[in-house]
Length: 109
Image (cartoon, rainbow, N blue to C red; front, side, top):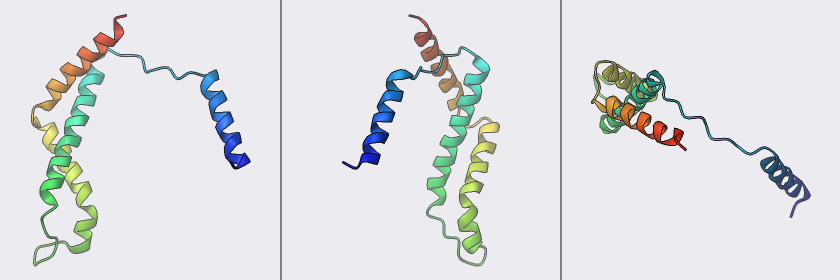
């Protein structure tokens, strides 16, 4: 084995043993959970719309060509954010509820 790789592995193992990684502390902050759930819903909607837009050609008399193709993902992300801000699909409320439930379960010993 290459000595450089072996030294890196030894260093990594010694660091892992000396400083164990602590899991993030659970929070019961409803505002943080709500914000995270809304971001999740926005990404979900963007993914949903992305698959819908994937079959649409950017050529033709009203197509944007390569420019549209290049910036389509950004447009779809903004559509997802806008739809979520207007109520979305209703996923955020369920996700918030589940996040808080799991955090409360993790907080109890």
